[in-house]
Image (cartoon, rainbow, N blue to C red; front, side, top):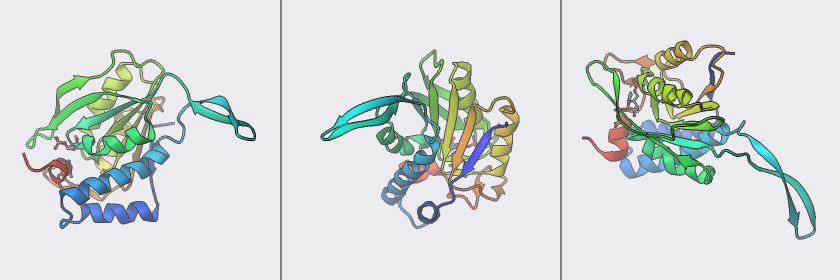
Length: 214
Ligand code: PRP
Ligand code: URA
C-alpha cells in the first residue's frame, strides 16, 4: 500500500476551514480556528494509535479499557506555522514528547532549508505526528518526514490544514510502497499551486496570518 491520504469530509471542518481562508479573518480568529481544526483533524490522525489493555475499578465494578502504549508518541511542529497547531495536538496527547524542526522555503526556488532541529536521535518504535498547516510543493514535509523515518519512527502522520495535489504527489513518489508508514491527514485538497508556490485558492501565507509578516 502506498502512502495513505485521508481528507476529513465533515461539515464542521469545512465550516471552520472556510472561515480560516477568509481574507477578512484576523490573526486572533485565525489562531483559534487553526487550533480547533487541528483538534478535529487530530481525532482522525490518532485513529490507529497503539494502545495497551488497562483495567480500572469504577465505583461499582471493573471496566476493561485501554491506555496509550509505550513508547510515547512524538509531536513535531514545523516552525513557524506548525506552532499554531501544537497546543491542540498536545491537549489530545498530553503524554507525548515534543520535537522541533525549523524549515523555511526560499521564495524564489521554493526549496526548503533546515534552520533548527531538536529531535530525539532514536525514534525506534515511536509514532510521530508532524504538524504543518500547508502542504504546498511538499518540500518541507518531505524533509521533515525523512528526518523522522531516518531516526526509526514506526509511523509518521502529517496533519495539514490544506494540501495541494502537487505536494501530495511528491510525497507519494518519495514514500512509495512499502513505505506505508507515512500518512497525511488534511481538511481539503485544493486545486493547484500558483507560480509562486502558493496553494490556490488556499488561505495565503499561514505563518504570516498566524504570527504576522516578517
Ligand atoms: C510555509 C508553510 C509550510 C511550507 C509549505 O512555511 O508553513 O511549512 O511553507 O511549503 P512547501 O510544501 O512548498 O515546502 P514558510 O517557509 O513560509 O515558513 P513559515 O512557516 O516560517 O512562515
Ligand atoms: N506556504 C503557505 O503558507 N501558504 C501557501 O499557500 C503555500 C506555502
